[in-house]
Image 1 (cartoon, one colour):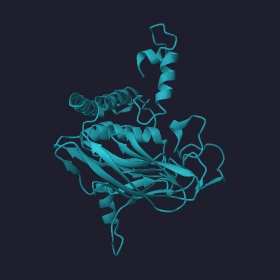
Image 2 (spheres, helix red, strand yellow):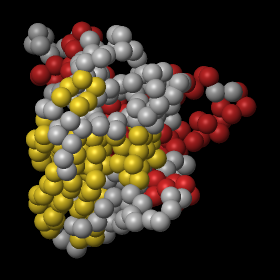
Image 3 (cartoon, one colour):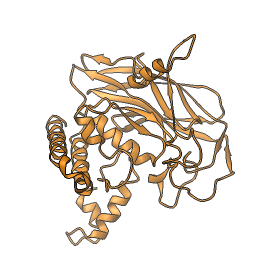
Image 4 (cartoon, one colour):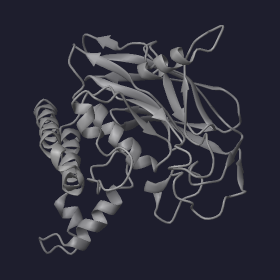
Length: 320
C-alpha cells in the first residue's frame, strides 16, 4: 500500500500498528507482496532451488491456498517454468483423509495406464490441481494446452482462450473447499492442515463457482458457473502485449498449469516487484533458518543463497 494509505493518523510516520494492519489487509490478496515469516512448513527454500535450477514443481492443495499460490505466482513472474502438483501429504500435513489435494494428468487416449507415462505428463505440466470437486477438463491458449508447448508471437496479438470446466453438484461445506471462512480470514481458505472445528457434516448443494482467467498472476476475465455436475465450455479473447503465462483458476479448489505465451522471443519478466519479493523471502529465510544449518554446510549454503539473490537482482533489472 502507498505511504499515505498506511499512515492513517496522518503523522507522517508509520507505526508498528499501522504497518501490521496494512500487511494483514495485503495478505488476504492474491497475489500479494507481504514477505512471509518463513519459519513454518511448505515452500520455504523453493526461491533458492528454483533460481538454481534444482526444482521442477511446487506442491499445493494442502496448506492455505493464498500463500501457496502466491509463492508460485511470483516464481512464474520471474520466468521460472515451475509446474504445480497437488498433494494431501496424509497423515503428516492433513490428518483427516487422503485425496484432499489432487493432480489430474492429461494422458490422451491410451489403451493401458502407465505410471511412467503419468509421471512424464506431470513433469511436463500437462495437468491441473484440484480438491476433486472442481475440474478443468480442457484449457487451451491459441490451441495449445498446458505442457504441450509454448505459444510464440512475433508482435502484440489477440489469442483465443477455450476451456471446459465442471463442478460437483454436492460439495462439503468446509474451509478446504472455500465454502466456510475460518476465523483467520480469507488467507486460510483451502487449508487442510488445521482442524477448523469438528468434521463438518454440512454439504453445499448446487450454487455457483467463479472461474477466472489468470494472466501473470492477475484475474483478467471471470465466469460464473453453476455447480451442477455438467461440463461448461468457456471462450474468450486475450490480447497479449508482453511475454506472459496464462492459466485457469477457481479459488481455492482448482488451478491449471500455465501456458507460456512468448512475444518476440523475449523471456517472461513480468514484474520487478515479484523478483524483489522472491529475494526478500530468501533473506528472511536465512535470518530464520540459516543458524539451523550444520556448521559444515554453512558456507556452501550461504553461497547458494547468495547466487540465488544475484539471479533475482538480474531478473529485477530486466523487468518492468
